[in-house]
Length: 152
Image 1 (cartoon, rainbow, N blue to C red):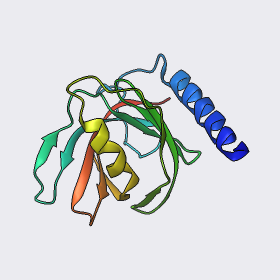
Image 2: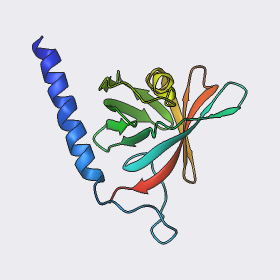
Image 3: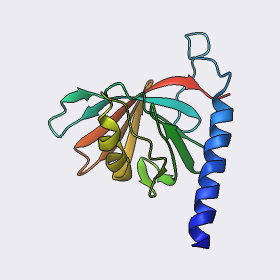
Image 4: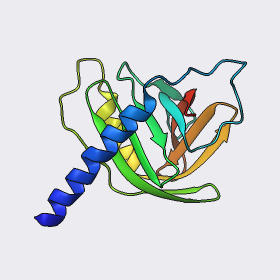
Protein backbone atom coordinates (compact mmCIF):
# COMPACT_ATOMS: atom_id res chain seq x y z
CA UNK A 1 0.00 0.00 0.00
CA UNK A 2 2.87 2.35 0.78
CA UNK A 3 4.32 1.88 -2.74
CA UNK A 4 0.94 2.78 -4.25
CA UNK A 5 0.74 5.96 -2.16
CA UNK A 6 4.29 6.93 -3.17
CA UNK A 7 3.52 6.37 -6.86
CA UNK A 8 0.40 8.53 -6.74
CA UNK A 9 2.21 11.28 -4.86
CA UNK A 10 5.02 11.26 -7.45
CA UNK A 11 2.41 11.25 -10.22
CA UNK A 12 0.63 14.32 -8.78
CA UNK A 13 3.91 16.21 -8.30
CA UNK A 14 4.92 15.45 -11.91
CA UNK A 15 1.57 16.71 -13.22
CA UNK A 16 1.80 19.92 -11.20
CA UNK A 17 5.37 20.64 -12.31
CA UNK A 18 4.66 19.90 -15.97
CA UNK A 19 1.57 22.12 -15.89
CA UNK A 20 3.61 25.00 -14.48
CA UNK A 21 6.28 24.50 -17.15
CA UNK A 22 3.71 25.07 -19.91
CA UNK A 23 2.37 28.38 -18.62
CA UNK A 24 3.45 31.36 -20.70
CA UNK A 25 5.19 29.37 -23.44
CA UNK A 26 5.18 30.79 -26.96
CA UNK A 27 3.52 29.05 -29.87
CA UNK A 28 5.74 27.98 -32.74
CA UNK A 29 6.08 30.57 -35.47
CA UNK A 30 8.42 30.63 -38.48
CA UNK A 31 10.66 33.06 -36.55
CA UNK A 32 10.95 30.78 -33.51
CA UNK A 33 10.83 27.39 -35.23
CA UNK A 34 13.85 25.14 -34.83
CA UNK A 35 14.59 21.46 -35.32
CA UNK A 36 11.89 19.46 -33.60
CA UNK A 37 13.06 16.84 -31.11
CA UNK A 38 11.11 14.24 -29.19
CA UNK A 39 11.84 15.85 -25.83
CA UNK A 40 10.54 19.17 -24.56
CA UNK A 41 8.14 19.66 -27.47
CA UNK A 42 4.42 19.94 -26.84
CA UNK A 43 2.73 17.44 -29.15
CA UNK A 44 -0.99 17.46 -30.03
CA UNK A 45 -2.68 14.27 -31.25
CA UNK A 46 -4.17 14.88 -34.70
CA UNK A 47 -4.79 11.40 -36.15
CA UNK A 48 -4.88 7.67 -35.58
CA UNK A 49 -3.39 5.69 -38.48
CA UNK A 50 -4.56 2.12 -39.07
CA UNK A 51 -2.82 -0.84 -40.71
CA UNK A 52 -3.86 0.38 -44.19
CA UNK A 53 -2.30 3.82 -43.57
CA UNK A 54 -5.79 5.31 -43.37
CA UNK A 55 -6.05 8.18 -40.92
CA UNK A 56 -8.95 8.99 -38.65
CA UNK A 57 -9.49 12.27 -36.84
CA UNK A 58 -8.45 12.30 -33.18
CA UNK A 59 -11.75 13.81 -32.08
CA UNK A 60 -12.22 16.89 -29.95
CA UNK A 61 -10.41 15.61 -26.88
CA UNK A 62 -7.39 17.92 -27.25
CA UNK A 63 -4.95 15.17 -26.29
CA UNK A 64 -1.40 16.46 -25.75
CA UNK A 65 1.90 14.82 -24.88
CA UNK A 66 5.32 16.01 -23.69
CA UNK A 67 8.40 13.80 -23.41
CA UNK A 68 10.68 15.31 -20.77
CA UNK A 69 14.46 14.96 -20.72
CA UNK A 70 14.29 13.19 -17.33
CA UNK A 71 12.64 10.17 -19.06
CA UNK A 72 9.13 11.05 -17.90
CA UNK A 73 6.19 11.92 -20.10
CA UNK A 74 3.10 13.90 -19.23
CA UNK A 75 0.00 14.93 -21.08
CA UNK A 76 -3.64 15.81 -20.88
CA UNK A 77 -6.96 15.50 -22.63
CA UNK A 78 -9.92 17.80 -22.22
CA UNK A 79 -10.68 16.27 -18.78
CA UNK A 80 -7.75 14.11 -17.69
CA UNK A 81 -4.03 14.24 -17.10
CA UNK A 82 -1.59 11.36 -17.36
CA UNK A 83 2.06 10.55 -16.70
CA UNK A 84 4.55 7.75 -17.18
CA UNK A 85 8.21 7.04 -17.72
CA UNK A 86 9.87 5.99 -20.95
CA UNK A 87 13.18 4.87 -22.38
CA UNK A 88 14.43 5.24 -25.92
CA UNK A 89 17.29 3.96 -28.00
CA UNK A 90 17.55 5.25 -31.55
CA UNK A 91 13.95 5.01 -32.81
CA UNK A 92 12.88 2.32 -30.33
CA UNK A 93 10.59 3.61 -27.59
CA UNK A 94 9.40 1.81 -24.46
CA UNK A 95 6.62 3.45 -22.46
CA UNK A 96 5.92 2.13 -18.98
CA UNK A 97 2.35 1.76 -17.63
CA UNK A 98 0.52 5.08 -17.69
CA UNK A 99 -1.04 6.61 -14.57
CA UNK A 100 -4.05 8.78 -15.26
CA UNK A 101 -6.85 10.67 -13.61
CA UNK A 102 -10.21 9.09 -14.30
CA UNK A 103 -12.59 11.95 -14.93
CA UNK A 104 -15.27 11.15 -17.50
CA UNK A 105 -14.55 12.56 -20.94
CA UNK A 106 -17.15 14.88 -22.54
CA UNK A 107 -19.27 13.68 -25.44
CA UNK A 108 -17.37 13.58 -28.73
CA UNK A 109 -14.03 12.64 -27.18
CA UNK A 110 -14.28 8.85 -27.38
CA UNK A 111 -10.68 8.69 -28.60
CA UNK A 112 -9.34 9.03 -25.04
CA UNK A 113 -10.34 5.41 -24.44
CA UNK A 114 -8.56 4.37 -27.67
CA UNK A 115 -5.51 6.52 -26.98
CA UNK A 116 -4.35 5.09 -23.63
CA UNK A 117 -4.08 1.43 -24.76
CA UNK A 118 -2.35 2.54 -27.97
CA UNK A 119 0.14 4.67 -26.01
CA UNK A 120 0.91 1.71 -23.76
CA UNK A 121 1.72 -0.42 -26.83
CA UNK A 122 4.01 2.10 -28.55
CA UNK A 123 7.29 0.48 -29.60
CA UNK A 124 8.97 3.00 -31.94
CA UNK A 125 8.72 6.54 -33.23
CA UNK A 126 9.65 8.76 -36.16
CA UNK A 127 9.77 12.54 -36.51
CA UNK A 128 9.45 14.30 -39.85
CA UNK A 129 9.49 18.11 -39.76
CA UNK A 130 6.85 18.96 -37.12
CA UNK A 131 5.08 15.58 -37.14
CA UNK A 132 5.63 12.75 -34.64
CA UNK A 133 4.44 9.21 -35.34
CA UNK A 134 4.29 6.78 -32.44
CA UNK A 135 4.03 3.26 -33.88
CA UNK A 136 2.24 0.50 -32.02
CA UNK A 137 0.86 -2.96 -32.63
CA UNK A 138 2.92 -4.67 -35.32
CA UNK A 139 4.26 -1.21 -36.29
CA UNK A 140 1.28 -0.96 -38.63
CA UNK A 141 -0.70 1.48 -36.48
CA UNK A 142 0.38 4.96 -35.44
CA UNK A 143 -0.61 7.86 -33.25
CA UNK A 144 0.15 11.01 -35.23
CA UNK A 145 1.02 14.23 -33.40
CA UNK A 146 1.79 17.77 -34.53
CA UNK A 147 4.30 19.97 -32.70
CA UNK A 148 2.37 22.97 -31.45
CA UNK A 149 4.80 24.61 -29.06
CA UNK A 150 8.41 24.36 -28.01
CA UNK A 151 9.47 24.43 -24.38
CA UNK A 152 12.19 27.01 -23.67
